[in-house]
View 1: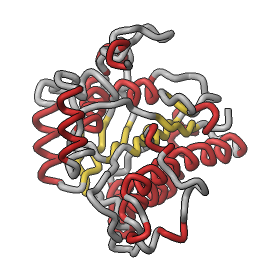
View 2: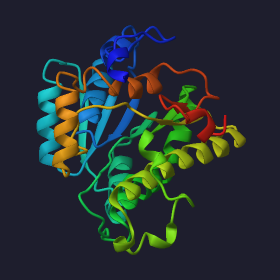
View 3: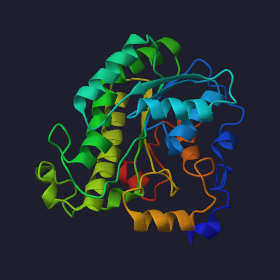
Length: 293
């Protein structure tokens, strides 16, 4: 039934058909620096494009650097003033995450916005190079480590600029697909005991719990940074590329609904427009409950 309410406007004045450009119209992001993971396609790429359009300096953190450069050049071709860096990041490898953080530090840029957007839904459960279940390693552990490594930079940036920093964890309503006991840590080193959808679901639940705890700690420390978890909505992306049935159904149902018109606007809205620092869950029916609001 959600398809029939696609054009219905909410309290914000926007609807499911609103684009990221419409949501951010009139916003000046010059002077802000944003890191976006998984920025070579889908909502990550569209978010990068619109932030660059609004004047932000964008760092695209991607697994395939060549693909990242092609995406950046194609997406930002009509934005002459775009400032974009493309850096390599494989979130399933903790060594790669540390290399990325070091490379970002070498740019001597402040960091105002961190968008933990990348995610996978594989066709089976395997182990990462570090010996952890791949969904959990990529969707949560990699982002958790990345956030910790970049946090001091964000604290300094918010303190010196007076501008609130934003950490956005792109979760999913799929976080409800977990075991009754929620996250089963003892199964993370034995993929044969995990269902891939549940593995995905518990990694998304971990994103939300990370946001909640980080928000609590930052608030307690008096740091001017908000931690946010969002559900970007249903959209045609590469997430389901390993499942031909789900991918086919989504493509048929959402034909014509691209990343410029759905999902990414919630990321950009969260990054640039939300001034209510008490609200940490976005576009998720159980967000307030889950986030402890």
